[in-house]
Image (cartoon, rainbow, N blue to C red; front, side, top):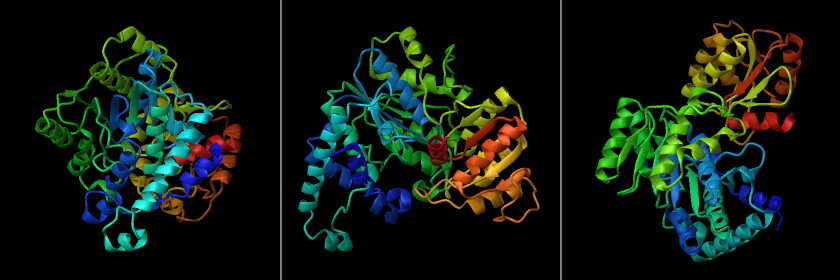
Length: 439
């Protein structure tokens, strides 16, 4: 088996991302539940328990916190495995060493072959699979994310990793990663997101995220809205889990990840490492973070005028992103925006439009459900633009609609060079991936 064949097999299970139900409702729990991953883990002899885990959930910042904590551990000489999603250019970005470098190809392939054997055993154990699924008496087929999660644990065990830093995929309580017995849980900033899966209020969403908290194990929390903080504190109290809210940033001179949000996330990562692993000095921690880079986290592409791509896709993350961009380049740049159908396009449009002289709305590909026409309509409304939604307009208009992503990228490069203006592309990691691939 090759790496391409392995990912092709995993991709044949892509289903959650295409819109299965999920969340706190009974119908949602039919799809998002831990039965399948627990069965797979048992058949694999529990690789998720092979080393201590820092477990990270939240709405924003969990990727950078995961990467930072993993980098600190790896650079301290602790062999670390890092699990993040989604990937931007290479699926192995999801499953890597603590410093972001990939495992040897042989590790992925051997773990993949082991996973396939486990999967076939799982299938055989499900007597009359389809019949049982219909009758509600069978866990059913595993999802893409569940299998990818198991592949991560298998890779970490094969490499004899001494630590794992694991980012949740969606939510927390019913997330496939929540079979770990974490040494410390980290809850980053919680916003309204994935409401069709996690609930319609901040308190409901916080309850889902708080599901990763473990009995008697410490919890690190970002600054939260009052109702969110109350939910997290109460859950920690119920489980006798020491609760550490972090309010200060950690400014690290020379850190490549730009923006105030990353100095704050650095403080979360450092606290998590301090609670889970002892003996790593502060100076060594800071040194580990200076050279850290992450794809699509305020990433400057090697072209001119400056072209920044960022996966920001919630109102708060977009606000942080535009603060950094405007601080560097002012308010006359060009925006390329595309987001998934379940995101708050109107709220993000209100934040973004005042900071750009030109805005182009586009699609984000086919992996996630998206409706660029509806996003364009939201931008028209936010910008009080009288052009009809879903109608293409000239690329040099203030607000443009180019639904084809590749065409939009070409147009924005052309416009940027003509006007000598910087570009910010945000709204989705899938848009960032498309840009990286094309450029």
